[in-house]
Amino acid sequence: MTALNITDYTQALGLQAKAASALMAKAPAASKNRALRRLAELLRGNVQALQVENAKDLERALAAGLAAPLVDRLKLTPKVIETCAQGCEQLAAMSDVIGEIIGMKQQPSGIRVGQMRVPIGVFGMIFESRPNVTIEAASLSIKSGNACILRGGSEAIESNKALARLVQLALVDSGLPLDAVQLVQTTDRAVVGQLIALPQYVDLIIPRGGKGLIERISRDAKVPVIKHLDGNCHVYVDDPSDTEMAVKVADNAKTNKYSPCNAAEGLLVARAVAPLFLPLIGRIYAAKGVEMRCDAEALAILQTSLAQEPGLVDAETGAAPQLHLANEQDWYQEYLAPIISIRIVAGVEQAIAHINQYSSHHTDAIVTRDHMHAQAFLREVDSASVMVNTSTRFADGFEFGLGAEIGISIDKFHARGPVGIEGLTSLKYVVLGNGEVRA
Image 1 (cartoon, one colour):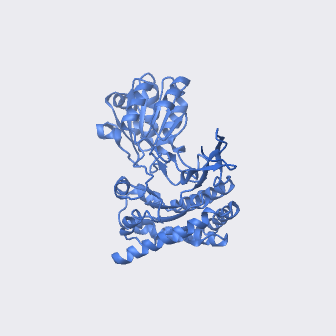
Image 2 (cartoon, one colour):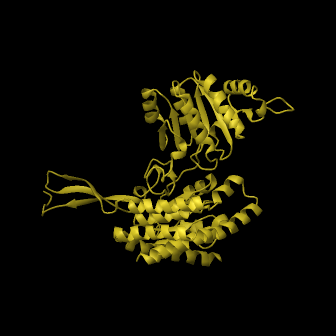
Image 3 (cartoon, one colour):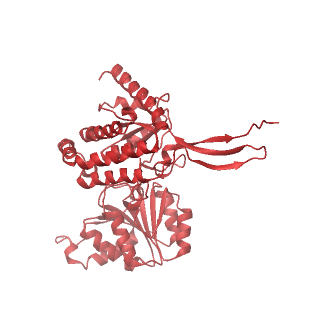
């Protein structure tokens, strides 16, 4: 497309979305739920066809040398498709919050004042890699009574087009406007610049992708942005803690899947439990090929313990090659790979200080037997999701019971953490009277 055509195209998307948003705002809950259930049905009925289109994207990504974590995010497996379908059904089963009035209070003047939950209007979603985001964004948009414009990455264009066709079919079959969910059909990056500068049509922009993309959109957008830059998540193993539980949680948080933003990138261990805990988790990480970047104290414990594991020691050097001394940058790093930073701390206060300094304020967890330590961690760790005795991998809209998520926000306004239905709504004041006038 030429620059003029891009401008005309993006303007048309905005105009169509604005018109559709007015219809979606007044759509009955039954119609929205019917569309979601129909979408789940279409997803399950088109697994093979979706994988054919996804294979085109995967082939192109591999040929272009796309990094392994990004290729992994690109895969549209039957499991991923089923999770999307279940998310649609979970949303359909949830109560409709649109039109809900909260906090209604009688005032001395006689008027009653409360707040009504209403749709945002039109949001633009700009995302990379994961094609399942198309379904998550579309389903949440439908449930929350919004219209959306979706711009996926060029690496997933065929998968996204196939998914978007199913979404629009579900909308039409349910009596809802076709343009309530629109996918940008071109991979021209100029569309992004146009889309984030259309306040007359677009009420909110949600970028979901690499740090560079999100920084650019946050800098250049002329409409509000919900964002998260990266996911440097931590697990802190406290003194006292259940060692078996700590090993299980630290293992799952790191190795369940390396590419998601809720995978643990840092492991903090209280000094008193480190001699017992670190050899246990170190053996698991080493066996799974996880590189450990440690402070000097943790490195000494792990080198000693792993040297006693012949199968994990390099035959030529006699060293454990997966162990390295960390540098300052490692504490800040989101690896999205089988690498983890490990640091020994004095206790819960130092762990909290480390997390608040180095983390991305996404998700952080403590494993502890001490209730007061748990409460301090929950209160003082400045992150969007804070957990006790469980894996950071649960920081997910589906796992939180939101049905799906549009992303995970590390902003403190307007939404924080996994952004579900309520994150795509706003509150307006409503006032009920009986002829009162102000004196």
